[in-house]
Length: 292
Image (cartoon, rainbow, N blue to C red):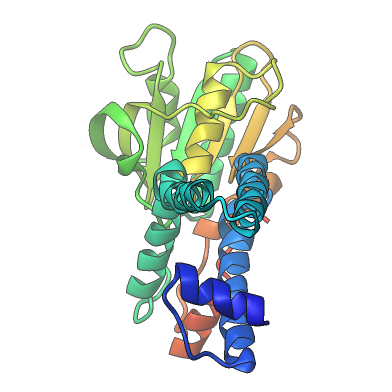
């Protein structure tokens, strides 16, 4: 404990701390760091990168302490400053994850006095079933993005604003071969087609299967960037893919499509209800951005 107290005094300028105070404050720091790791990093494509950086930081810290014991003060100070620089660079390296967390935090706070919006209904499920059935039978590719709490406009580019009522006729025509808007994504919210021909961010996950083309990689990248739900219909195989939080579920048969759509779209099928403040705070504390 004396060595820890000396380290705090030499490098952080903190003095006069008791052993219990040091343990308590370190416990808070560890708890906060673990919370952010569990909610932002765990089971995501950047988890291995974070672990590698942490192992590297630990190695640098051990080497710097060895230099300090050997009275190599210049090398020790340089390594300590390098550690601080790497920690500060986390704000840049993991900017997308931090942005996503802040967006979810802001949306949750704004929603405290409000009820959930009923974004889709059973009629819209029928519209999707008709459209997906047509696309599969005619080997037509399609890419649908269902906006949830986080606006998708922050991470998408291009597209044509429609603000049209969602219908199977509209969806089928938007993805008809050689039409101007068929090669992008359609963004849907509140039973409306907001935009068509939208360009989505590609996933940078190097572990993705080689069979996934640009459309699937864009869908996965979109789901990694926001809390949206994405549906992809493959023009080569007719396979239907449901994608959320970077995780993809692919199937082919249409017999259980309505049931699977209801299950997949459940986050935006919530019925309006009144929630107490403490319930919303509890939900916010349990906020999970890793997809689990």
